[in-house]
Amino acid sequence: MKPIYHVLWVYLAVFLINKGLCCVFLRLNKGLIKGRIATIPNSNKKFYAFQQIPYAAPPIGTLRFQPPVPVNAWDNILDTTKNTKICYQIGVNSIEEDEDCLYLNVYTPKLPSTNSNTSLPVMVFFHGGAFAIGDSKYSSYGPEFLVNHDVVIVTLNYRLGVFGFLSTQDEVIPGNNGLKDQLFALQWVNKNIHLFGGNSSEITIFGQSAGAASVGYHLVSKKSTGLYRAAIMESSSVLNSFGYQRNAKHFAHKIASYINASVTEESASEEILSVMLHASSTEIDKAADKVASEESYNSAQLFQGYFFAPVVELDSKNAFLTENMFEILDRGDANNVPVIIGINSEESLSQNTDVNFLTRLMKLYDNDLKALVPNNMNIVDENSKEEAGQLIRELYSGDDLLQNVPAAGIKYMSDTTFTRPVIKYTLLQSKHSELYFYQFSYDGKLGNISVVVDGTERVGHNEELAYLWRIQNEIFDNYDLSLFPESDITIQNRLVKLWTNFAKTLNPTPEKIDLFQNIIWPQVLEDNDFPYLNINENLQIKNYPKNDSFCGWERIYDQYGNRPYDSY
View (tube, rainbow, N blue to C red):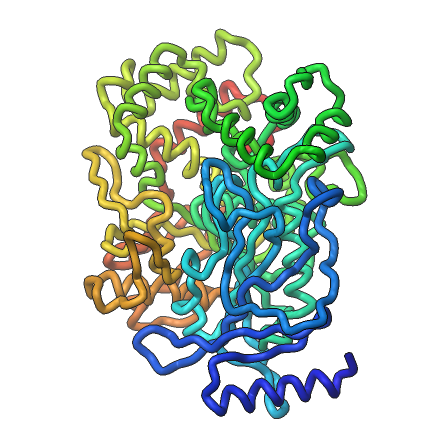
């Protein structure tokens, strides 16, 4: 399509907008799309929503378990006004699940026109969900609060669970296809975002939980170099053990054996691939659910690495990651861009909703102290592992975890699943790039989790999300913020402003303003006292987050751990 035709399409779009019509058209290099005009809550301000734009070909048939490839062009106008597809999920049964799920959404407050070269900062979000669940639907991650600050927002689906992270740990099924989907989407954004008013040289990638771990993987992968200029990680990093799978081939054999009983641990990778390619998506999904529901994996070891997660690949043309993440960071070979990273004050607080599970888990740990020890410590000697486990237990509850349930269990799980690796990541990466650390400590109604446990802090995993995103489901809707306490609204305004300031200027507090109580958020530096922003009803600069438990873990790693590490 010649450039003049693109100008005409933009002119048509502006004409339709001025006429007050509900839809808007854009010409992409693959074809014409129709989006919609939406309204920001409690405002007459409009923005433009383009939902479910294909960024890669459907990964079906022979493309199953392969890296993404370009989508074919389309002839008719593509309706991008709603979300109807999510990727297959573990433990979810929804009519929206589909292998054909590689779509993204673009939300922009302003489109370029014939007399305006709009060029806004761009924020690309990776959703969380343990690399097993989650989606980018409008109802899950509504962009209104962020778009209101004049940034372009992109959210996306990427393959999950077995479809995104099956690996035989060789060249047959290398793995990491979910991360390669994200990479492909970032490449799409770089090529196309100017058509939506975005600036491809001002892209910030951000994510929460497994989405934050995904951001971390892009920071250590050379494949992603140059596709973004900054990063935000909420509640996870590339060093979090849950987001890395050392035994991927074992799970590949297991899931294939559930589909075809002839598959054993001795079966070749080619046989596994053949079984998986000939199975229906429903058969694969059911087998994945069976793997996830087995009692033997519903235990302490689950937190050492979820069933289907990123892996280190053999070196090849399409490999996304070929060496241990920790060692890349330690020698300063990551993509060293400015970073915001942080934690919620008690990440595993919601575990208290199932006290029976927590008690059973603490009993398991008390009976087998070695289960407390992270696999990434690489301890071979069983006596040493027992000693390390005993020291870990003493960090939380003396000589009996059951005497302090649920607090001891929650604090241990918060630290080992989320907090410890995020702090360690910060210490490594702050030597090489500008880095800002936060702790989200505000316990508000917007957080939507009401759990109080004596001996723990108050804000659990996911609670910051509703301060950044408009979320709508059967039990919660934060569209109208006026229904929430005034302090919630203040915190919401602060968090969105910090994030969007960073996307615009690479500094979350470029100047002193009343909203931030005139605080300037300092960077973590190699030779300072690990300052961090405590985001509570009042903002406060503190030092050394979770210092007592983290220092205890550091001593145990120094005494018993064996390099090289992968995670931490």
